Length: 433
Image (cartoon, rainbow, N blue to C red; front, top):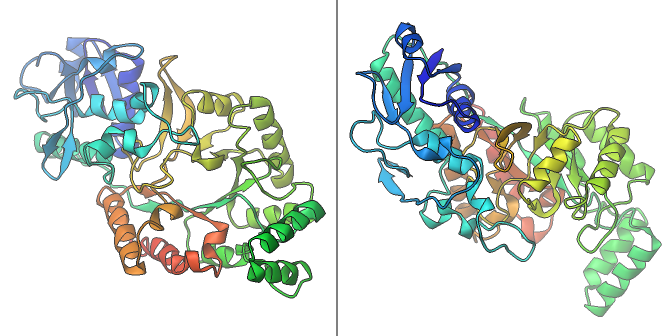
């Protein structure tokens, strides 16, 4: 067990030390403000405070972990070997940066509480983040810093054996609409027909009625293919089905349709199933609760995981609503059009509520790549290169890679040409682990 001496034990300090030491490095950590207890500890230990006590392993502390609320923090990003970091420490510290303060800044999403410009859907944009501005969005810096800290600590405690973790994947299958033409009802089918005619989309019109009359397979119905892929790997896929009401933003299937319900049940036999909260449920806990209960009735078990429609997050309200409904896991945090690490980590972490200064029980799986981000890369060869680069970054720190694909990504549409192959690369990336 690692013992940390500090002048003051705060919720922020306990939160970030536990993420770095326990979740990433697999080492239990405890804290003391008593010098005698620190001196008497006969295993690995360090001090995290303003002044070094003696010749112990020491990291000079930044004020952020001892503050409450938000303040105007000056961030100066510097190069550090093959990565970047901020909160420079000076010479006396065993590592040149306060990685705990920097990690807290990224994990708590501190910058998302500060004034910023949202995109057209009211989302925090990648371009607003310090990770994008200073060119480290493509690295899980929190995990990289944790490994640097471990290596330095190992130099001082050469006999201590750190546990080894292994690279893993958690593929997400997002299902905003299970079918393109099936189960849409008379009004929506009629509206779709008129739209096809007005835009002279004759192939779409032909496909629509071939599917409706049972002569063709619905292009969005790729579930058999995905389940077969699930059978090839021990890593569980997570399906998020939209079961909210039809609206301007959400155009899913009516959850009262028996065929749709039986599809969700069938998928739940092989994969984990969560709720894709509708656009209006994001802001309305009453709608969210209704959707949660509806999904629980379908899967016949308590709902543990959710994902917000359009990957929209309003911190801290979005997460407080999930906590209120005892939803334990969220998979919303990430950027739709940018590949990278929004919270700076590829290790699931607990949400820290900056307003209440408390670590919450909600576990956040930040996703690192959405299929839409790969559309910005032109050739399949380039897509493969970009995908392999992000996988390699996660592998370097034995992290957990979380990609988001949609059910229609596996269709025969020209737009998604080659994406089955990209998904295979993700599945096969665990073969040597």
